[in-house]
Image 1 (cartoon, one colour):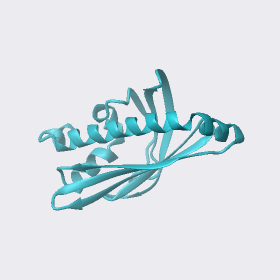
Image 2 (image 1 turned 90 degrees about the vertical axis):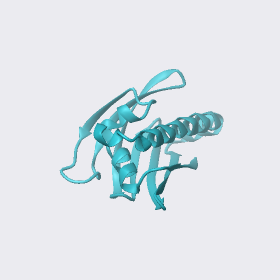
Image 3 (image 1 turned 180 degrees about the vertical axis):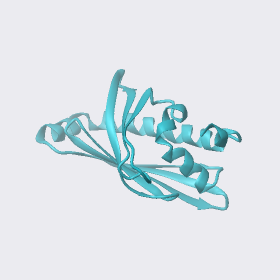
Image 4 (image 1 turned 180 degrees about the horizontal axis):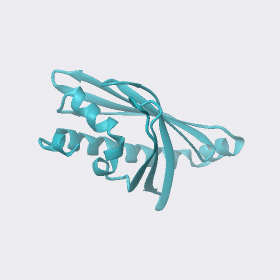
Length: 155
């Protein structure tokens, strides 16, 4: 399963980077996150940052552990999560053009076991729709936060 979502944000690349890389503030930015705990904090940069995030999906509370595997400041970072017999990779990237920043999320989920592959075949369509809807809301929340005039002071 692979898909990509993008949104245009009326803010500089640096401003949007400040919002998306502020993982410890994500619970205040993204409405779908109920709880977030930093598990490992690198001395410098984002690579190695690891956190536990709780959301409600399909009417059930789900907690996942995610970590940053690659990053280039003001450009992109990539996260990894392993859950339900699958590996999930999300790449968050920024492109700026004339004061507008396009924020893109590329999501992939690959089942690692026979059981995971069977579940993806049977119920994958439902998971894809729910995941797309959730990530689209995340994009809209990030856009609203980054475009706020006083949001810089809140970070």
